Each structure stands twice: as C-alpha cells, then as structure tokens.
Length: 210
Image (cartoon, rainbow, N blue to C red; front, top):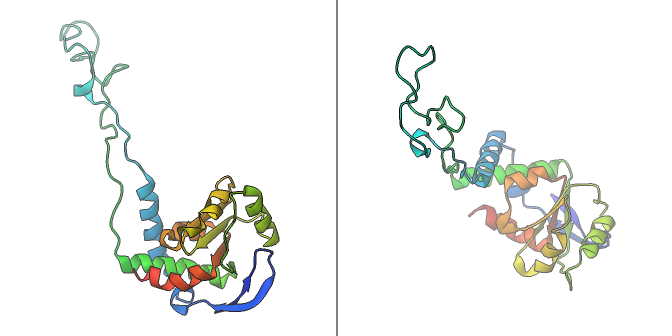
C-alpha cells in the first residue's frame, strides 16, 4: 500500500512511502486482538485492593452474650462479619492480574489493528519532524493543518529524540504520542486517526517482529 507523505502544514511533499504488507496488509485476526487488548488492560490494574478479614480486625474476642436464652442470633465476638466494623467474608485480596501471551500472537494482534486502520484509510504519514520548543499551541496548529482536530489521534514517532513533540501534546485529551517501541493494539484501535512519521514506518516492520 502506497501513501503520500505530508508536511506539518498538511500539504503533500511529493514523496510517497510504501506501507509494508506484512504489517498493514494482513488478514485481521479478531481473537488475537481480543487477547492482546485484554492483556494490556489487565496490566494496567494495580491489584492493590484489600479488605480486612476477621482475624485482622482489632477488637475483643469476648463472647457477646450467652449461647442460649437471649432470643437473638449466636455471635462469637464483635469481629464477626455480621456486625458493622467486623471482618469481611471473602473480600478482595492483592493479586497480579497480568498474564503471558506469545510474542507471535502479540505481533499478529498489532498487525491486525494496523491493517484495520489501513483498510479504513485512517492513516496519515508525516515527514520526520521535531519542535524547537515545548508548545501545545504548535501541536494544536499541526492538528488543525492536518484536519484531525476533532478526531482522536495517535502519533507514532521513530524514537525518543522527538521529546518536545511528546511534551507539547500532553495537555490534549484526544491526542496521544508514543514511539514505535511503545506501540500497542489498544492504542491503535482506540484512535480515530493514526499518524506515522516516515522514520516510524521504516522501523515498524522490524519492531513488530521482536
């Protein structure tokens, strides 16, 4: 798939870039996408939720009243789950939600997501660029020139040398800037428009193979 390269003003530079078929032209595998997105979201969970069980509650273990003859239910102590402030039965405990996926499956999932974007013509390619200073206004102007102001965008850069671009975009809710190494299926699918630099396109095929 061949696509025109744009400059920051949204105009064609006259150059074209070939999107590799192994990344942007595969038959999408929806189940691989599901598993990769599921793993990504699971990895975001801290798993630090915790409730105290009966043996962790501070309180007397004295029997509240005699076993029989009071007309009430039997209760061992004030730490019983039946009472306000008592221990919780089967409450949440800290756990790790992450799980393992094979590298080939993750690569297939990312390629499937990218192929969906290519099929829907939701990919723009920009010539490599950087900002001289950290200015959100500059990034907003770039989006306006590219006619993607109302879209949720994902800009993929070749590397971290474009740190000014990333810092200029942090205050924008519908914008996310990542490097090729940080590319994931969830972010690709969650974006309305995928913006790649020419340097990112060159390194993308090798990065997905890792």
